[in-house]
Length: 386
Ligand SMILES: [Zn+2]
Ligand SMILES: [Zn+2]
Image (cartoon, rainbow, N blue to C red; front, side, top):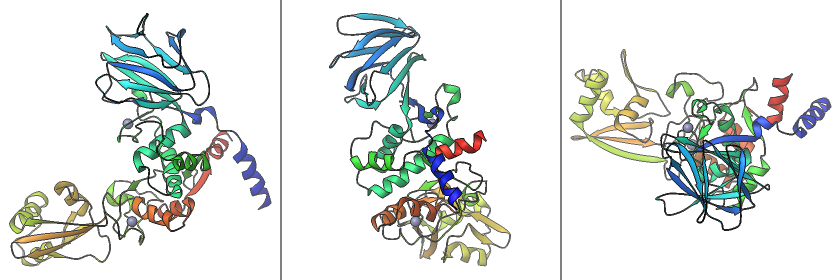
């Protein structure tokens, strides 16, 4: 035991490796601008064109950067600094941040650390080389808003960090690692709305979630599970040991706990018959299709050999969740459902409630992810290097 503690201490105090410290984020992905103006928000920057310094950004100085005939042109109000195939914006001090305003947008957005700008289809490819903890704080604010308890922000910070490191090759072909959209994780700007977000990031610095083989997990989450989370294989193809169904009694009084919708009876039966070949002409099958009330999350509307996955009904009909009851009243069929989202992994509204009621971030993560470990990135580096 003592050896383990000493070992853990030694490993935890090892500095994070450079490869885990900085992420390359493609900003304004699929909305790449043709022209931006930049201004220092904090600290200082130098502008490099083709690797050479062309300007030191003074306070309040505004610089225009645009794509002109496939090159990156840089100019100030009074001076054209030239055109380059690559422009870098390098901070001169730690803690520097830059305001970037896209042409045609009313507001600028503030981002931290360094940038690289290249021509891209007549536009600008802007890559933010950002310290991972700055990125994590930005994502937590973009994804979780600014009104949650700090312990919940710690939960999101660990999930976000785990996701980022697990998906570092997602945009490799485009020359960066992750985009700034929901396709990866939403990253609108530097975190600034609630100081607890930055504190939560710092208090969990370097911590990620791994499975028993010390592999980063797929830290799936959703808005509200409706009282039962789902297995990974119930929604996607693969079974993952840590994404197991479980009862969740922390999310039942929330905005997304409950939903209700209705269809015309004939439209509902036609849908099941045509799309899924469910034998609604059979009296017993029809009874099943019109009256169904689950005690817990089930995966199929089933009769004899016929199985219609609830996840497919959810997708086809745009329902909030795949967890619902069916009740026929005269000409209508009423679906009453629980939860919002795919139901796999962490339930956000449940996790928020656990945080409000005094559970720690690690208790919350262990509640939703089965048999996982929270470790510092340096532990992963240690095991991979040895
Ligand atoms: Zn992406
Ligand atoms: Zn839940």
